[in-house]
Image (cartoon, rainbow, N blue to C red):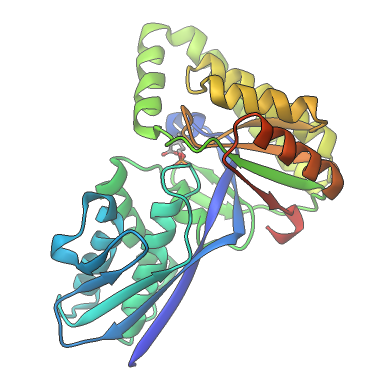
Length: 309
Ligand code: PMV
């Protein structure tokens, strides 16, 4: 084909970040409103990338584009096509390094579009492997949660590398608030590992309480128990604080969301920056909560309706 496209979207972690690194489950929600499209055209030039961050040959692309570059190169290799003669354009933007899955989403969109431009439709396993290859270059040792959730149309239950769709009848509205600060997932993950080595019993206790919340949330989602889910989110934020992965900016946004009437709020993703996720009973509450978080330092907010996830 002369031109091929594919899309992927952002994700947020509802519950279970960090615990998932230590074998516990996590639940992620797709954010369809924040999406990317990759468009691949054939050219007579070397491999080329065209995004808001950089436009030029991939050979000279900045380090920040390690994930998309790896996705292009590895996908062409996977389908047995030569590493030349394609231009990849990325439209749309998911803020990078906010725990929203931007690197996995860009890799997911690129892998599917590049393969399609070679006449190949990737299956889920092939696409997952290519996203993970890109994520490893960008982030080290990803659990695979992002790679699963940026291409899922439904909430995802993820544990020990395995993902499944999670039924949800949840109503209400989630508010996502961006601190504007880069999340430091790698450091935060290392911080938890160090704490676990120093205080194994205490950390095991925290991780198992997070796990209990994640497990209980399955029924909250299925039964639309917003109050229970909100309470669990706030409880898990306190546990993540104990794991040292929060920071004053995140704590302030969580407190301001709760004071503005949120059913619950927590950091989402790797932490030490990135985003907060709050649950509101109604769209009107969500507006009030979003405004409160912006007044307390959030750079941007987005609404996420659970029925769209
Ligand atoms: O910052 P994010 O959304 O990529 O999430 C990291 C989630 C962790 O559990 C902290 C790490 C992982 O690989 O699952």
